[in-house]
Image 1 (cartoon, helix red, strand yellow):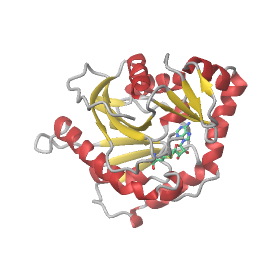
Image 2: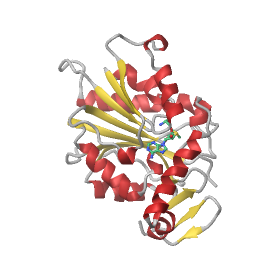
Image 3: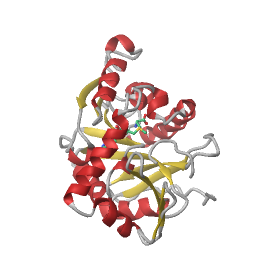
Image 4: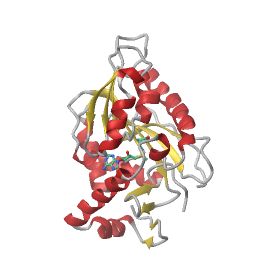
Length: 276
Ligand SMILES: C[S@@+](CC[C@H](N)C(=O)[O-])C[C@H]1O[C@@H](n2cnc3c(N)ncnc32)[C@H](O)[C@@H]1O
């Protein structure tokens, strides 16, 4: 990524390489980067407000617009009239299981959850226990993995959708690319990644507090190319408070792009975040 960026203290970087060299240049620094990222979340309340950085009220518009997007994907890929699908999803960096509970569990027969922070994952387990769910018996949370994405390899061919929301900013570019390359094998034929993230206006913004990076749309597209992933569809989130970063949802396919939804260019960390 050639464009420059900023950190949350206002420091400017000429390009992403310069920032990564400083932040994770050698092995101990990289370990510290991930340690501090998880350490930040270990100090956060296991609540919707906690995982959404104090913006619990964006839960509703977030889920509503993700649901509309997911429905278009399911209609395209798994039409209900055509087959008896047993749909399986992986939800990554789940926090307390907000996205699975409010959305994925209603559409997928099984959802596996990955989250490196144990008190969040325990809250997710509780939130998704059969006693606390109002879904059909044929829908359940199956596996709970307490590991970070950079260390996870999904079982081959298990998932129809791998959902990654508001957590990929914790991964360095190298780990971003190797995660998606590995995780492709975890998709069933025709399966998709869904990535929903904050978007920087240009370049990147580094959050020194939780050790995460908000990338621009162009930055993401460069990384998708490195992963050999194609944008199948994308959409801008609407209805969030003005002071937050723009949010975009991408559906990505390892197959040749069959459809690209171009969104109009718009003026303008890792959770809904105030633009600093
Ligand atoms: C802003 S919260 C989002 C939680 C959830 N995706 C949601 O939308 O409600 C960010 C989550 O990323 C998790 N996280 C931090 N580092 C991670 C890593 N290396 N791999 C996977 N998840 C990570 C945090 O523990 C936290 O639960």
